[in-house]
Image (cartoon, rainbow, N blue to C red; front, side, top):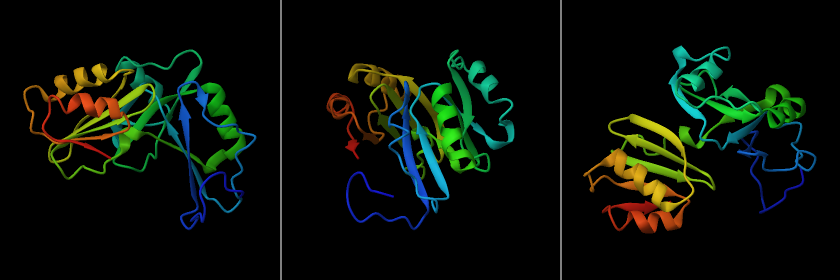
Amino acid sequence: MRQETGSNPNFADKKVSIQVKLGGLSFSAERVVVADDIEQVEFVIDTPRITLAPREVVSLDCAGELLRIIGKPCRTNEQSVCSELQSDIVAVMAIDSEALNTIIERWGCRASFTSPLLDMRHSEENCLTIDASDKVCYLRLFRSGLQRAEAHDATTPEDTLYLVNEWLGNDKATPIYIKGGKECAKLLRKYYKQVICE
């Protein structure tokens, strides 16, 4: 595989990760070359139409229904996909149908799906974590484990501040870890004591 950026790649885990944005693929499928020995091509789905659910209640048959129940149904040009069904917590998310068809046609069973909402790096702490992408804000509240996780359309730091205020209320001491969104972190620091950029 010809490397597009960086140097000295490490392919020991035989896994490649590609981000899929709201409007479809964030890469040209013709330009992405995945070596034959790569066992898994993981697609990170960047969408607010997502929910997390226990493994016991999720199947490919009911994924679309779960999104509809929480008020985030697939649009007419979307289909539902799931992250690894063997995990304790499964992400059910909407993906552009054309992008999904391209992925399946190109990578078949080597393709898997995930979401920033599944990031559990701080799960042992009592904290709030935020991943801010171009159009989506992913929030996870940990209180001796995952207490709450949601994805929202959020295009301004004020949108994110509103969500944080709703989640934390008067609790100004809970650490907030933020990835992406430097302007958002700057605004949050005016109201919360511990805002840590990652």
